[in-house]
Length: 115
Image (cartoon, rainbow, N blue to C red; front, side):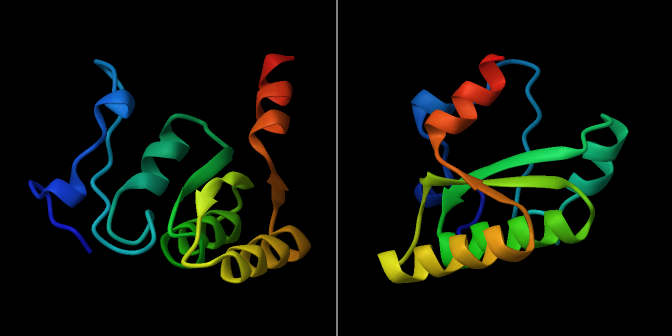
């Protein structure tokens, strides 16, 4: 894991949060395990999550499975995640779609939220 203040932990300029946006400092593989994310989301009455990121077969998978297990409606964004290799990525997507939630690509996400 990368520690706060290191280059690897930094946020790309194009993705920097806007003033007032919530920032969670994740220090474990899963976003729920070392943060107050679950409580924050529930206090905001959020019941669904769209998850993208790296590494598909590690951090993304742990976070998505944990979200689904906690009862959140969860969508993994297939073409907005990156795994160590394609077969590992594909295995996570197949398992998640079969047992835990939905797997969409970015065009499906955009179409859904444009409605």
